[in-house]
Length: 269
Image 1 (cartoon, rainbow, N blue to C red):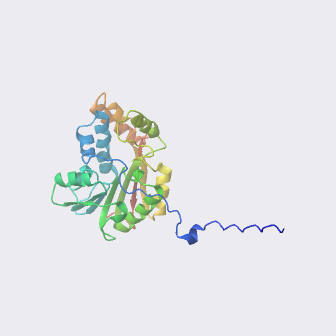
Image 2 (tube, one colour; image 1 turned 135 degrees about the vertical axis):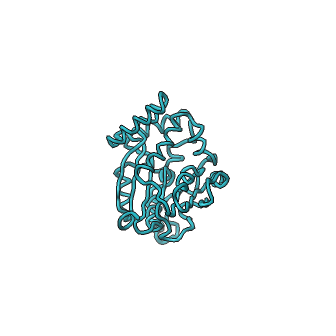
Image 3 (cartoon, rainbow, N blue to C red; image 1 turned 45 degrees about the vertical axis):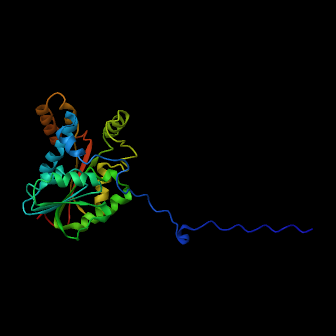
């Protein structure tokens, strides 16, 4: 009796031809409910360290990328709108975007003026034309999306800027004590879980520089802030301000947040 011939094995599916290629994972909004007034509460009623931490964002804006009169400004990941309200004090008009419906509702109800509009949209669905904004602010948002999404976002922000426009981005600095702070916050349940849940990409000054170059943005400054000063605020707010001034002068070697300022094209308007 002749042996049965081996049945040929079907070739492994080719992701390029099956139409089922694995796509990079993408974040589509918050994985856990975040209170719409979170940033407002953190700034106005949080523990003193948290209040000082959020206050330093305003000090950074004034130092490296202050809003200019007569400009149209975009706040990406606006949360409860505290930064947008601050920018609107000088800008001609502020558009602000967030994917959290509760945050947008809170921001709209607490808008500081009629030169503001809050938009409920994900970052890849922002309803704006190219060359629309003179200044764009994206504060502590990119760590909430995956790296390929950050690349796409930075390219989109480049397109949204007018020639000579400015972009400011801030994010936790993983080449600092920040990972320890993040671990402690998760251990003590001081916020919805950060590592791997809220925070899904990790940035350092070197990596932030690289992502700006990839988006064809012109680097103006990359640096660190928010070092030991917030923790000194437990002892004295005024002392913490002095420590922040000193840390700023020495380039904040322990800065737990990293920032980047980029331009598009030529000089600032």
